[in-house]
Length: 302
Image (cartoon, rainbow, N blue to C red; front, side, top):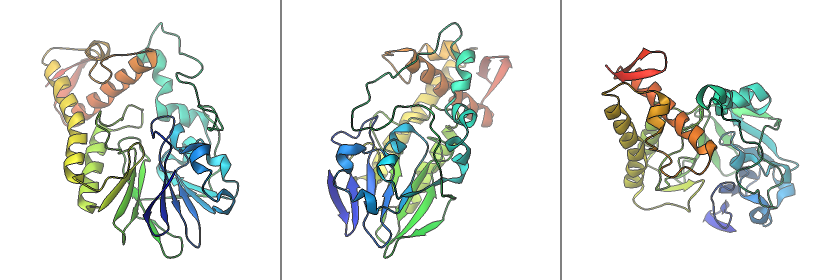
C-alpha cells in the first residue's frame, strides 16, 4: 500500500507492519530512493522497482533488509557503525549476541529454523547473508536526491548503528525501530544500549519533527512528545524494577525469572532475549555506578 506523506514522499506499508515486515519509504525524485526494505513484495508491487537508484538501510535487522533483492539497480548504504555486520558472519553473530547463547542458555540447544513462518512475498529466510554496500553514512550526513535532502540521524540504542532519516524542510522523520509501539522498545541485542536509547529519544524531541514515520506503526502526527515519553517510560520502569530487585544479590538467571520483558514466554528464544535485556540493563546500571558485580555473575546495589 502506498500512502502519500508529502509531494514525492510515500509510505510503503505492509497490511500489518509487524515482524517480519516493517514500513518503508519511497522517495520519488531525480534520484529515486527506498528507505528500508522490509515492506515485502506485495507492498512494493506499486513501486517502480527497476528505477530505484539508492537504498538507505536504517540498521541490519532482518525485517528491514529482506526485500532488497527486489531492487536490482539500487546502490545500498548503511550506517558506518554496523558496516562489518553486512559482510562478516562473526560480526553479525556478535552484533545480535548469538555468541552469548552458551553462556546465557547453558544446557539448552539453540533452536534451528524459524520461530514464525516467513510469508511468500519475503524473498529470503532469516540468518546471515552478505550485503554489498556501495557506501556508508554517519550522523548528520545529507543525501541529495534532487529537490529533497535526506539527513542521516544516528539514533543508537535499538542497535549500535541504528539510524533515522530526516527530511528537515518538511519536518518529517523516519524513526525506524524507535517505533512508539505501546509495548515499548526492543533493545535486546548485544549492540543494544539502554543509555543510548534514552539519549536517542531525547534527540528526537530536540528535532521536534512535525511527522514521525515509525517502522511498525502508521504515520504519527499527534501527541509526539507524549508518545515518546510513554515509549521510553517502559525502559525506565523496567530498570527501576531491576534496581529494586538488586537490594539483594541476583544473577541474570534469577532476574530473568521475573519476566519483565516477556511476561508470557512462548519459547527459549524469548527466554534468551529476556536475559539479553537484563544484561543491557545491568550494563547501564553499572555505568551509572548504581550496582556492582559482587562476584562473577552476581549483581547488587552499591
